Length: 142
Image (tube, rainbow, N blue to C red):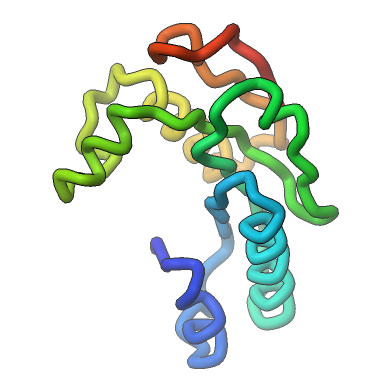
């Protein structure tokens, strides 16, 4: 189930998420976005018996931004996805990120994050294959 962040509280209040066991939160790296993700986790924790919650941080422009992230306590970071013109263009065209080729580095990374998350493996850090995305520096881990 995918739910827009703004609708999580509404779905929790209507008891529409009682069968949810895994919650993957997606946020930009801004402090505001990360605070909202932490708040959503708190609301969900109070109402739902979650087995696992993880965070994917998106639209980071470089390693310095990634290094400066302050992930809120209680949120395990599954990984990060850099700002990417292909993703931006795909979105402007009204297409889903998931419509990109499965070989596209960012999509492959997201699938890896989510597959590991859903398979109940312990959390670990995941490299994003930045060296394959134009304009990005070396591969690094959160």
